Image 1: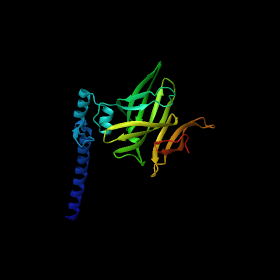
Image 2: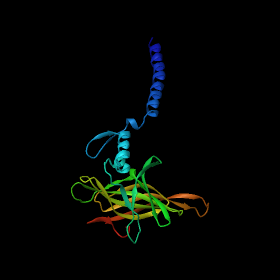
Image 3: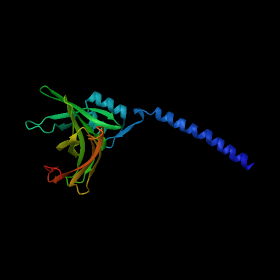
Length: 232
């Protein structure tokens, strides 16, 4: 009897467990934006699709709304790096997914030059710096590409005012060309940021392309918060 009981328990488990897995798979397959709710900066909880329709009809920034939960008409903008003349701001208005990460993207043109800027939202890191009340400093990598072959990566510093619901780009520094960022690690005192990334390299013997792991540290000034002229 004990053997029969164990047999039926084992058989039941073999039947029930796959059924649970199938049900969970169906649930995940049917998961959609209708099941997503976002809590806004003011505490209001809104269904995602409804929020995006509201953004379309009222002209709210999709990037500020879906990534930062801020309902505003002002776009999230980045100043194009290394512009010696008048600063050129680029509005990030679209959200794209690449390798399971979210990127806020925008297009720009300077005369006959056309290009794009993409900011990696999922690698944003808060900087432990002294700021005014209701203000947060965060760092995020972004890339700049144009008609040329390069994709140039920079690290940007941004000031978020949680009371005014604004985000301001305050500084940026060059990291590398055609790299893949692995991690961004600010230190606890807010004095420097370490970036671990890989860079394409060609083996001199095999002539095969390899990913060379590298680390660079950028020092931070405190008043005001900005990058020091040169990395450490």
